[in-house]
Every structure is written in C-alpha cells, then in structure tokens.
Amino acid sequence: MKSRLERVVRIRRLLEELAHADLGRQIAEARSLEQSAAAHREGSGAARADAWKLLETGATRSWLLGMADADLLAWKGGQLEALAVGRQPDIEAARQELLSRRIERRQLEILDEAAAQAEARERIRREQKAADDWYQSRAAHGKER
Image (cartoon, rainbow, N blue to C red; front, side, top):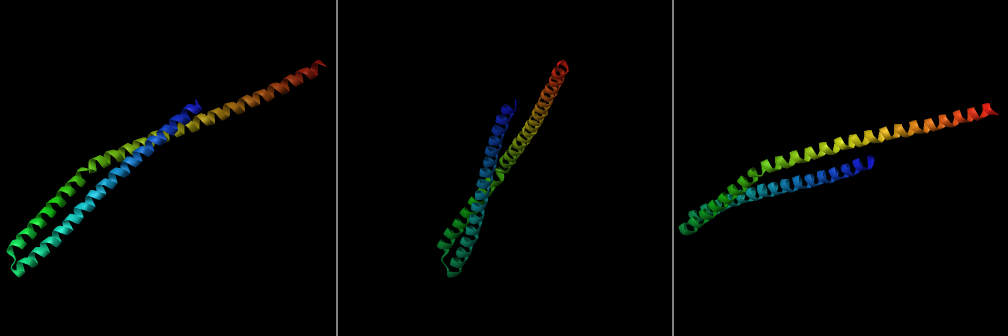
C-alpha cells in the first residue's frame, strides 16, 4: 500500500507543479498585456504632445495625423487593458486549481506518513513477538533437559 501511495503522491506533486507553471504563465501573460497597455498610454500622451507642438507651428494636417495616431494608441492601450482585466478570472481559476492540487497532495502525504508509521509499528510488533517466541521456546527447551 505504501508504494502505491508514494506513486500517487508523486503524481499529485507533478500535477501541482503543472498547475503552478500554468498559473505563472497566465500571470506573465496578464503582466505583459498590462505593460503593453501602459506603453500605449505613454505613447499616446507623447503623440498628443507632439501633435500640439505641430499645431503651434501651424501644420494643421500634421496635427490631425498626430492626433489620430494618439487616439489610435489610446484605443489600443484601452483594448490591451481590457484584455488584461479579462484575464483575471482565468488567473483566479488557475490559482484555485493550484491550491486544490496542493491540498490534495498534502492530504496524500499525510496518508502516506500514517501508513509508514503503521507499517513501522507492525514491524516492531512482529519483531517483538518473534523475540518473545524465541525466548519462550528457549525456556521450554530448558525445562525439558
């Protein structure tokens, strides 16, 4: 029984590691989306500032193109931010999966430890019984002589 429990614990440990890797991947993807959104927002601000400078010089057509670029960057940033926020339920589900895997593994480790202790107690009991039987048989042979 002990060897089966050990195998199950190893499998659960592997499943926990996979869940941990999946959570890490999802967090990294969300972080990347958030960083891209921030970069687009910064780019939008810089494009607006450049467009206003162009307007001050009188280049209306260039100003319109600059504002369009700024609006496009702001829109992309908003879309990326929405994607990052949309990933949060998946991240939370992956976190819950990891925690449930960890609990399952820990419960099996406790069972495995209990089985090992029971096996050790049984081995000690058998050894003690064998020693008692040996002394008892020795005492019985001594009385016959």
